[in-house]
Image 1 (cartoon, one colour):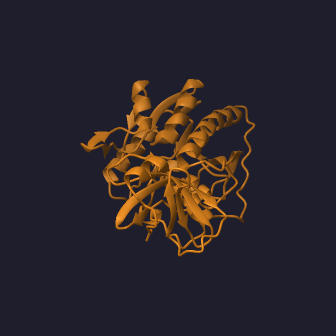
Image 2: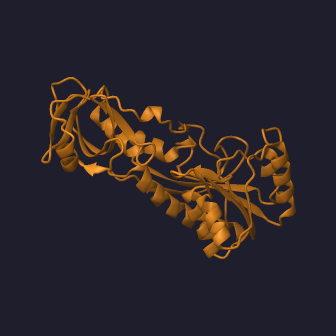
Image 3: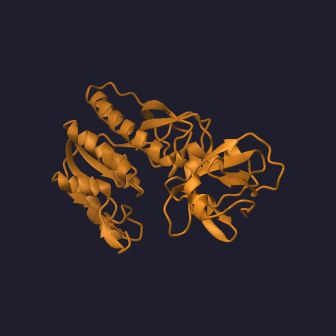
Length: 317
């Protein structure tokens, strides 16, 4: 079986590595164009492109695959390349570009997607963030046949993964990436043996995992402590939950919700010391913040942070 692989970030690179090491022939890799990164804003290849180049796999980076989009010539060239590349199947993982019907119809066996959610629970761009933010007890990987709708295709393989109480988007991403890599190899082997059965997604339980914006990472302490703690985990490592303390915007990286009532207005700091950490009154309960960061500084445990940034009796908001 010859494969074209389409993906961009580390999540996709793990899947590409799994397929390559399992012996599948990767005829071509598609990845998004290089982006400026770092302090010098130098162009940087995606993790998928880096893996492909390191293993002598051909790479194409069209800005678009839509013939009616902003880059029609690049899209036409990409279509021609796909048709000229001998392959049976396209595997897609966090590619980041829309695959129009004209592309979905090119591979003999269609296009298969690795999606980081138990569909249809979270369709869309940010299923890992949204699962943690919503307080889901579990998530998982769905291998699905792609169609024109947004993550609406029939399911080929699913596996559940519990969400630990201390999971962040970063830690859960790594678990799901490893699981996705294992499952796509399993799925393609079963496909070769004719054992892969497509099952339509349930009509109930559909949610849209909208892309994370930096604006929504600004915390509001007029919410329950449990809700805020989930947001902090969901926005770690990106974009990082933030809150304004006496005019200074701080990043809050780790926190736990305490059931105790504060009896003070939301946002008021109840304690800020090495023993207690930073305790903040919320609408319901108290938030114990254990890792913080000030502008231009490093992430620090609360005990170290408050030694150089007094917060006792201050207020967020």
